[in-house]
Amino acid sequence: MDVFKLLMDIVFPEPERCLQCDSPQNVVEIEGLCQECLKKFSYVLNYCVKCGRQVNFSERDKGQKKCNFCKAITYFFERARAPLFYRGAVQQIIADFKYHGKKELARPLGHLLSLYYSEYYKKMSIDVVMPVPLHKERERERGFNQARLLAEEMCRRLSLKLLDNLLIRKKNTPPLYNLSYRERKEAIKGVFSFKKGKRQLQGVNILLVDDIFTTGSTVNELGRFLTLKTGVNHIYVYTLSTADLIG
Ligand SMILES: [Zn+2]
Ligand SMILES: [Zn+2]
Image (cartoon, rainbow, N blue to C red; front, side, top):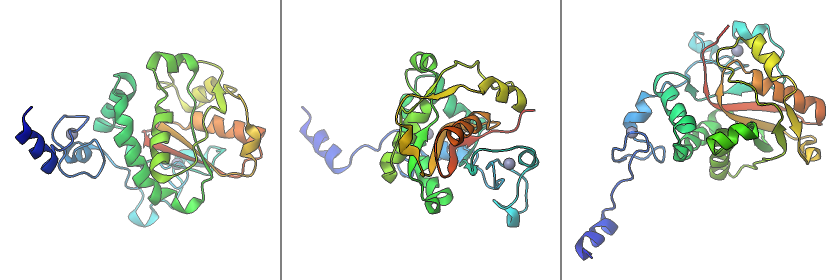
């Protein structure tokens, strides 16, 4: 055993390595991701007051006005927010996390969510956090539900109450990414149901967590379902990223 090296490691521990690019992580802002990787991300700077999508409003209207898409839609949630814009390096890291088995990315990505929570939701008195459920077959294929891992990490850091396993997704919907809002809305309709314990949602403010907000049709259906079936107070949506509109 190299006692000298051991001693050096204690006095000057090796910096943790970035989970995405494997370089040493010297400045730690987000646990597990280096500064270079964080700089490559697109952050949502200006957003619609309702859906939280990146918009081109003036700085004065940031988070004040609705985008054109939202003017035409009935939402079953108060608002949606996301720190990241789903493109480039953000798209890549989410793909690595979900499809390429890099489950450990839940730690930095959940950390990032927890940091931006104070900007978007600290004042909203959220009672419980619920991850958007995946269909069990999809979860088995992937090995995990990405929304749950993100929500767990965020709740752990912020001491928020996580409510999981209350809901199930009955239908395994095909991937929705190439569908328009109306097509998605039809595809997702009626897919959620309760497993147990819906009474505990009486009068509470719920924060739904997911990885991407695309058209919002999944969280909107979940919001519709919760509004119809429970005496929930307010529903809010918080996703890691928000995408450009399709159709
Ligand atoms: Zn990196
Ligand atoms: Zn909007």
